[in-house]
Length: 186
Length: 291
Image (cartoon, rainbow over the protein chains, first blue to last red):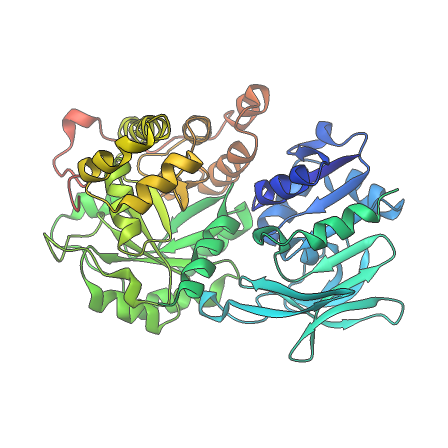
């Protein structure tokens, strides 16, 4: 199976090495012509303003949005979650807008607010979650499955083919979330 | 600083990879940088080219000025303190800066000691010209490294020299027999564990950006192809004819640094680049500060 990893900016290599270690073929998506024959899509952490702008300028937004709407399995982390969100509470921009949630950017403040938290993510127990200048989900539509919460804030959801996480499983040695993502790909 | 905090600080640098960090002196410039695609901004009162022109002692920026920039943008905000000036660093930490650059661009406050960065919760980036300097800064607690280059010159030659030297020393350490690593640790004046990490992983233990002299999309692409994980652009943007366009072009060049056709397009009609100073015309050598 062939997983496309958005590689316009951010921590895409970390996702690549986890997915490769699990036996997946990966392709880094740096421009429009890279988007072909994909079975899954990863939207990595980084800065959402940078990634969103580059998606637009490099004409990648529409083809990727079409893939998402057509049901390609997506794993989005941190900035990736912001790109997927239908609405952003403290930003006028929206990017893919395919995930029916309201997110708040930099919800925990600046770098001094970055933290670790151990908790359950869906059926995966005791996962070490890394939050780096992270967003959280203020509200999610009723048909969205909540995967994880920290202090009553939603930090992970699944909606149809899309998994959106406010934290960074790609920074962990624990590969259970990536393994789960690959298991959703037929 | 706890081990956890240090890991979180290295993680933030990982999120900046593949991006461009731009020097800005006003909230307006910060907004231009953000909308052009900067992954972070460096708030400072004078960009390096103007520091050269002005002469005199160059210090940490006014915290009020930095606050103004923090209010203006949603991306991480960095600021510089003088080498060894831990009181300036404490002040920057108090205003919740996202990254401190202990920088040779400012006048050094200490000609012997760098800041003990383990004392801080906020992350530090430091400049380095070779593997030894990089690992010494990491040993002091830096969670990100950049080449020194020669700031404010618009001349890429020093950044190239520093990146090549670092990469070739990394290759050398990686190819050593294990029993040679002890001697290498002595030679580079760093702890054995750091040399061992480089030997095992063929890279620095933290993210490594290029800085000092980047003025064009081609400069940025050159540094990325030489192994930089991202780029700082200081004077190169706001000392040029069309800052917005140049900034956006450099951002795209860092993403697609191997696509020469795209780089050709990006390099067209950017207006005047910063004038620049050649190596043999430089009065003040900043890279010699802090070894």
